[in-house]
Amino acid sequence: MDPCERCRKPANVCVCDRCERVPCGVTVLVLQHPQEEDRVLGTVPLLEAVVGAERRVGLSWANLAAARGGPTEGRWAVVWPQQLPEGAPVPEAGQVLHLDRAGKPTDEKLEGIVLLDGSWSQGKALWWRNAWLLKLDRVVLAPKEPSIYGRLRREPRPTWVSTLEAAADTLEALGEPEETRGALRRAMRTMVQRARDAG
Image (cartoon, rainbow, N blue to C red; front, side, top):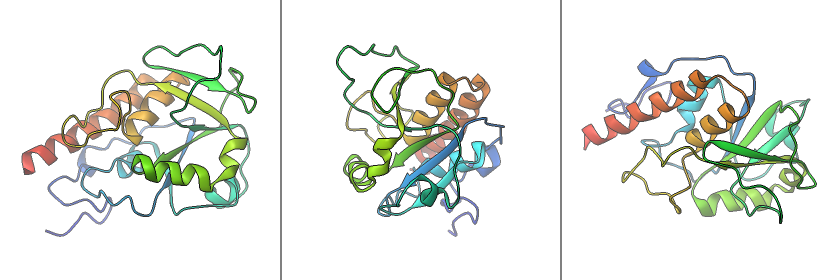
């Protein structure tokens, strides 16, 4: 069975027919580890289709501008599970804690967010190979609900979710309409259901 030319997923799990493009005021940049090869259950193609996410596959880039392929303006943050600074408030479910470069809470408007896509070990490799990420603000997310993957693809911890789910919750917490989160999650639920139906 030939893969979909657009998302490269097998035809029986392709959800391009269910991906509704929605406007998004925050740019989403996904740095994907080259060994992240889950074409069936990977969520980055859905992010590209729904909110126009930018995907870059590789291990390291000199800086944010190099990763994006051109000059970048505005304030950016990396979404990354991490230990909170001492004394920092713990975000409630569905909320984010936006920290500036000094690790202090801030409510400054973000131009874009960076997400790392791959297994936990692959994500750590991307983190350590791109020191410029430390110069960005950071977003600590408390997901609203467990991952849609369920038993199809287990996350290292119950509170960890897919790249798409992290982006969806973060965007809503940063002020994007709830419909943005809804459109992303609907596409993922459809993909997971089709994968289950395909056996």
